Length: 125
Image (cartoon, rainbow, N blue to C red; front, side):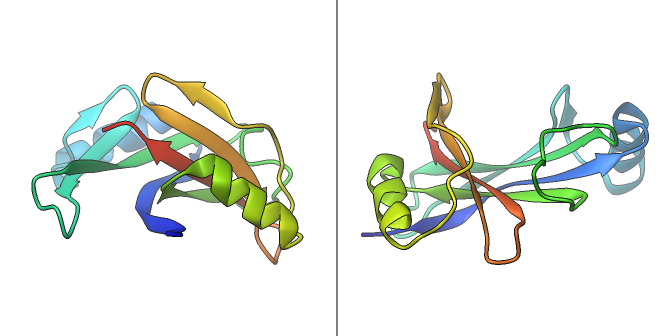
């Protein structure tokens, strides 16, 4: 079973998410949107299958990264999230919440070996 297939997103805390997003747009040319910026790419071996990596600044007061104490969180793209969660449970990995489903995919949060919150995403591209 495949586990992680790519980086789904990079999220970090910012004093002013709107301002930092504008900075990245102006100075580094990111094609921004209300959620940050998306980077499209194509999955191998099927080079016709489009995918996306999300870049998003969060308010520095966000509780979204808790229980981790870090100022960032990485989102990993996965296949078959339900099966992966069952395997991770068997391996003793801490599952933070229940799988949630949205029109753009399924999500769940886990803690890595150092207590960093990690987001797992089965995307609907």
